[in-house]
Length: 215
Image (tube, rainbow, N blue to C red):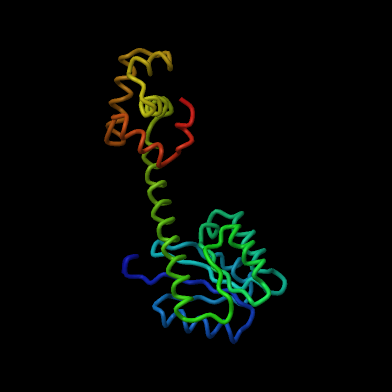
């Protein structure tokens, strides 16, 4: 089974056991995979990672011990679950907290009780954002792996070529001969498939855009 045939995964955190069971049943009925956690601490302990087919975290904003906002803060400090979109569930008096959650990057918030359609719309938006982020991460990882095939000097040459410098200008900046630049350019082409400036610029922008900040 490949990623295209797997359903998106929705992680649900709520300390109300009866509500948690109900929401998990509802989410599964909408065609998603659903995993429940009775507390924010349990979610952190399990530490699920984003999946290519898309996922999101649906959590109550007000919980004992660790609140939804505190969980959001901790996830933002991490590199794995930090990229998982968050949808908050709020009570009547939690609108100010929900606004704070949105400002911190949550994709949506649902005020209890919410309809099936409202839930579905929010989950679809979050899952789409997750899948797009996963694709972007995969492209960046692939580009980084390609750049890592180059020697440090080849990478210097590739960067300058990507910035639009000619072979002669690269040779002057790096204090090497035109012939050496030509040899490095051949090595770049052999290792990553192209030595053209436009192709190198696209690759570096995808992998490490900060390298092109300074000409």
